Amino acid sequence: MRPDLDTPLRSERLDLLPLASEHADELTAALADPALHTFTGGRPATPEEMRARCARLAAGSPDPAEVWGNWVLRLRADSALTGYVQATVRSEASEASEAFEVELAWVVGTPWQGRGLATEAARTLLTHLTAAGTTTVVAHIHPDHHASARIARALGLRPTPHTQDGEIRWQADLPQP
Image (cartoon, rainbow, N blue to C red; front, side, top):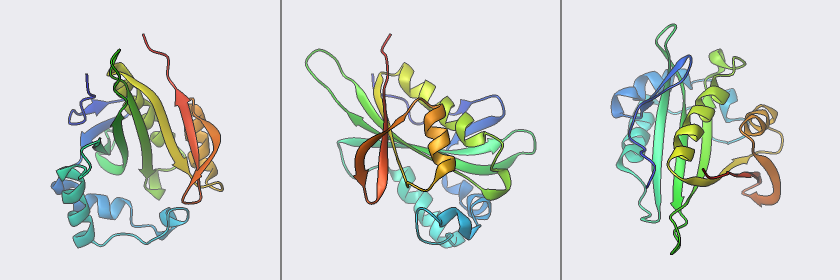
């Protein structure tokens, strides 16, 4: 069973809503701090760039071997859109079963950092994906991005000796029910 990447999810404090074009302007504002790009490079997106990015992400992966899921994070306490989580799902099908490797990514805007929201959102997403047969979860994290490393550790991921584009591959192999 392939994970459902279009369903809204809910955590203790957050609504994880599938990314849609109507989120672009609010997402642009939430992610406007240039400091968010310290480890990933680039700069904050303009509203036009964010609308184009949202449309591209919502259209899905051009690679038939992978599927994208993207959720914005809505903090219920004040209805603020605070960031997003992403999942790239790759099938690891075999004759015996169909399993999935998922690469996770998370970003929370500067005003909401330090509250555990990224960990809460990523854990909610991972729980959802594990129930659908995810067997391996990975994240690629810059070696100096200590906050993201803490989130990965909280999810049960561990650093590997592998790097990609200067980022360390973190991984967890998940037990199956």
